[in-house]
Amino acid sequence: MFNIKKRDKVIVLSGKDKGKKGEVLDVFPKESRVIVSKINFVKRHTKPTPRDPGGIREKEAPIAVSKVMLVCPKCDQAFRPKFDKLSDGKKVRACRKCGEVIV
Image 1: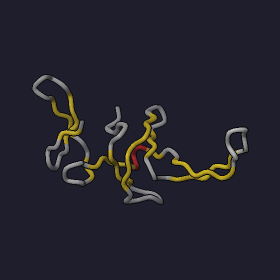
Image 2 (image 1 turned 90 degrees about the vertical axis):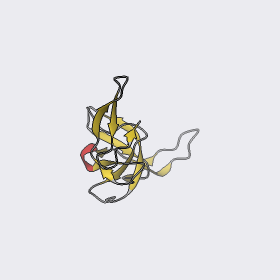
Image 3 (image 1 turned 45 degrees about the horizontal axis):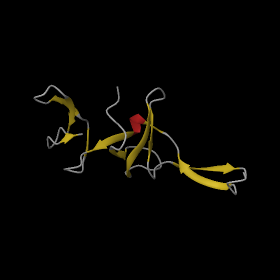
Image 4 (image 1 turned 90 degrees about the horizontal axis):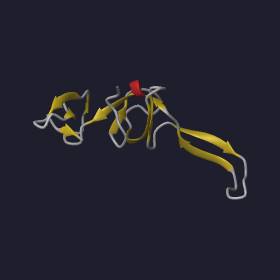
């Protein structure tokens, strides 16, 4: 089970994009990887098609989930989430530092 889900704000812990923040676009649990917006750009050479002129395109590549950490929307710090249960029994993630619930 991952602590990170789509549309979460994360910070990169290591690599060429260390310290950058972005939003998770996609999660690949089987490969333990995530795609983060504007992080880990790679160049891909594409052939021309009837609809696309081709050329060199830049896009985000997957990054290991161990290299990213959640960022709290309230205190804006990286944190490991704790799991709390609400009064209705629903399990939610919460910031260990300020107690903010992450939906």
